[in-house]
Image 1 (cartoon, rainbow, N blue to C red):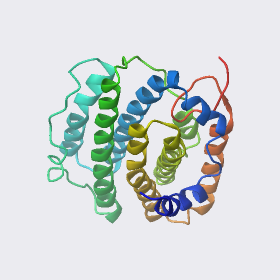
Image 2 (cartoon, rainbow, N blue to C red):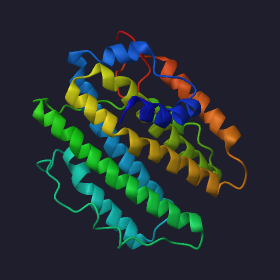
Image 3 (cartoon, rainbow, N blue to C red):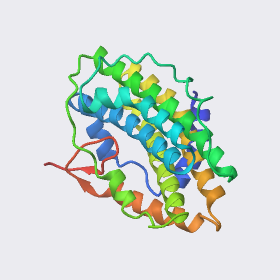
Amino acid sequence: MNTAELAVLLAPIHQFLHCRTPDVWLERAALPEQLPALLIDHMHCELKAAQSAALLIRRYATDNDSAKSLLAWLKPYEDFVYRKVGDGHFTQSKNALIGELHAKGTQPWQQQVLDKMVRLIKEELHHFEQVLAFIRQRGIAIQPLSAAGYASGLLRHVRSRDPAMLVDKLIIGALIEARSCERFAALAPLLDDELQRFYISLLRSEARHYQDYLQLAADISAEPIDERVQQLAAIEATLILQPDVEFRFHSGVPVAA
């Protein structure tokens, strides 16, 4: 991706988000001693993104049998990360479930949620495996990491009843994916050539994920979502700009513990 293409891709993301990643976060992320935590947390983030998409499908868009198939799809990854089960080599086909999952209900958006989120899960799991390969290649020991407060800080503001709850979750999904894309682009030039190429390669899918989430929110909401987007984007920016003793992929401004 050349400079002009990158600028075109990032322009709507920079407009959507209310702030850029602070330089002090980028400086910390670029330190060689910070790389293990960065990659391990990135791997976790890819799995969490897949889990979040699967939860939306299970709650709003599929029948019980399809929900069980989704759980089985994610289980080897969850077993590896959370239970230290398996060798981290995942042989199941990423395409195997597409013909087996069925939308429930009659709302057109339910099929849209199913289609878009299944594609997102496939891509996030692929990214998970790519990050894991870098971790292994560089001899990094996989250590447990405490969760960042970023996603939970956003989810605290979700409204309590559907469809507003679903709309908020979709907008938050868009914000998280947009922030990931913005950080990948900002961080890439500070890393070695191999990781730089990898992070640039992720930008198109992350940008599409944010657009998919936002379009679903607009399609499902009975009223315009612009005001709610601005409210949640302001909260997201506050989380990014606030001091944070934990360094994570979506953490705030790093400070000494």
